[in-house]
Each structure stands twice: as structure tokens, then as C-alpha cells.
Length: 438
Image 1 (spheres, one colour):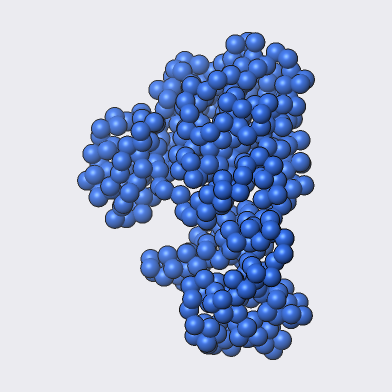
Image 2: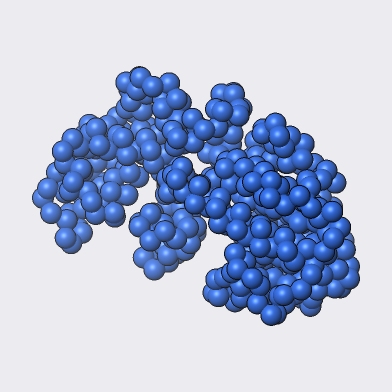
């Protein structure tokens, strides 16, 4: 947890550091993984309980490791209903073995763990007078986000969304159609993977059970499939690339959609895949080799600026999966809930509009530009699109060839925008718009 909170890396990448601490046993790894994720989902509540229990002693928990350790301990007492004395004994014994834990820190943690109990969460909620704040705490989401979403959705919808955000998503994989699908499915069965075919997406399957983690299977190492969110795979089908076309995949790394687009094009035509993060471009290049992709050219570029010579051409289709607040990724990345603030959205929207405006110059007449974010907030989506259309009369929103989600809640957009939500689409939250140049 310390890595993700303090150095801004993802929680999943932080958990990969467990082996650095000697945690290699699979069961122990799974236990730690679950504790950290479930604690992070409830960080707003755990923070309130910590502050209320420790009073002025919170200053001595500026140390991120001790603060996060205390969060996990509170989580176990309050949400797992483990008796407080048992948790307290375990944590305090551990603290005594650690270097650089002073008396004040020790006694602050002891005070907190002596104060919280299995009813602390209910007591906390009863004392919160603001209804929206209480609702947000109850479902472990930022209050500012709830206030904003209530402008477009009712509380029942938001409750269903938040409940889904607090659960891991079902596992989906996208099959590499450059290999015969029947061969892939047969090998998956031989490896003990139980799955069902997706009713809408022909190259996607839902994994129900697997004896080994999917990345450890031989079929994964051979590039038979990509571990991909269902909504992410849906986006490439919305783009609808055709063999022989020239496609721009902007902000492409690490390559999930890029390799999918290439497979849909049967390795025919050209895909220019840009990103402004060199390490991520290297990751994309590795995936091109793993999945036997031949028609992709990775290019380092910042798409807010004129494209470099290697990408400076007219395209049949453009996919802009724009960097955003990632407010749709809460099921898989709960730490993001507590990083973003409303002012971040306005900054992101300005950058997204720059990208969209710049890339629109490279689209052929009659071509289509698919704008996507993994944000569920209109500031980064509908409002960006509406601002763009005001200044670019040659563009219009067009109908979707496929539906996995629901229409936009913004009346000016409606069915010309599509929203994916975890409780509706078994997907991360995505906002999707297709623009055509007339």
C-alpha cells in the first residue's frame, strides 16, 4: 500500500513488490493482496476512524508504513469482525520488532486499536449529518464525486454503481484471432480453464475458473489471448477497423487495443501506435512480438502537438483513448478514488480537448475518430465533445454499430454517446463517442 499511496504507482504494481519482502507463498500472497485492496477500497472510512480514535496523536502517524499498517488493522477489526484484542496483540508485537518506531507512534496505534470495535462504522455513519457525505462514506466513495453524479443519476443508480465498484470485476480474456479460435479454446480446456463465450463479442470469453493464474499458462505465454477488460475489448469493435486501412491508435501503450485492432485487420494495412511514455512503448513492442503482430509501427509522440514525421499522414480511422482521471477503474484500481479531485478533471479536460483538436486534422473526409476515456465524469467526456463540436462544424456524432452500455446522461448527447458501467456491462467504466468528418 505504501508504494501506491506515496509514489503514485498503481496498487497492482505495488503488490508485485511483495516478493521483495520475502512473501512468495501463494496463499500468503493472496491474503496480503486481499487485505490491502479491501483496506484501500475503504480508505475514507478508515481515515475517519483513525483520526477520531487517535485524537491529536495522528501527527505521529505521518509515517506512511505505520499509517497503512493501522488502516489494515482497523479494517480487520471493523469489517472482518476479528476481536480487537487479537488484532491489537498481533500488531503491537510486530511493532516491537520494528526499528525506528518511537513510543509516541506505538501508543498512538495502541490507542486507536483499543478504541475501534466492530460497531465503529455504524457509529460513524450515525454521526454524519450531511446525507450525501453519509451515503459516500457508506459506499466508500469520494463525496465530491457523489454530489456531481447526482446531477445526472438518481441515488439508486449510484448505489448500484458504487456496490459494483467495490467488487472485483469478472475475468475476461480477448482471444488472438490471428490463431484459429477453435485451437485456442481447445488448449484452454486442456489446461483446465472453465469459460463461456461472450454473447456479443466473438473474440472474448469470460473465465469462470482456472487451476493456475492465467499469466502462468502456456497458452498465455504463446500469445493465444490477452487479459483484457470486456469494455476495453468492446472499444476496438466500435472502432471497426478494416483490413488494408491506415489507423492511428493514439495513447496506445501498453498495447491491449493495439494488438486487438491488428488482429481485427488480419495483420493487413497499417497501424501507427503513438505514446509519449518511452518505457510503455517498449512494453508495447514486446506485446507485438508475443502476439505475432506485423502491421504496427510504434511512434513516440505527444498527441497534443503536431505529429512527428513518422506519424504525419491522413488516416481512415483514429482511436483516441485519452489519458483521464480513471474514475471508471475503481473496481480494479481502488487507490484512484482517493487521488483524484474535481480540479484534476478540469485540467484533464483541457488536455483532452487539445488532443482531440490536434488529431482531428489527420482524419480523412468520411473517416471516423473514436474518442474514449475510462472516466465516468461528463467534464472529461460529453463536455469535451460538445466544446469540440462548437469549433469544428465538419464533424458530427454518429450512431453506434454495437451496444454494450447505456446512452449518455447528458441530453445534448443521448444515444450519440455510450457509457459502460460495471453493474451494467461487467466492465470498467468507459465513455465512448464516434465522430465522423463530413
